[in-house]
Image (cartoon, rainbow, N blue to C red):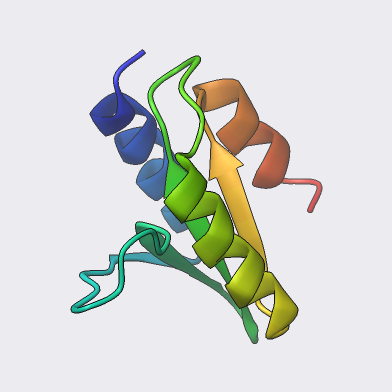
Length: 91
């Protein structure tokens, strides 16, 4: 499945739960996640989207680790099912 289809599903799922998704453009920083997800009342996390079966490149993994080391939550999703697992109504 294409990354754009997974992204649309992410946005739809998060909005249905009352959250917001922002596309982030990083200047001078390669490898950072694509999206910031904000869920009420005060939960934020970063999401790296990949086409089904694709994995982050080494420079992306390094940046994700740097962010996690700073206390950030970073997820990588490559399917609608992985989005659903993160953002189910039960969460």
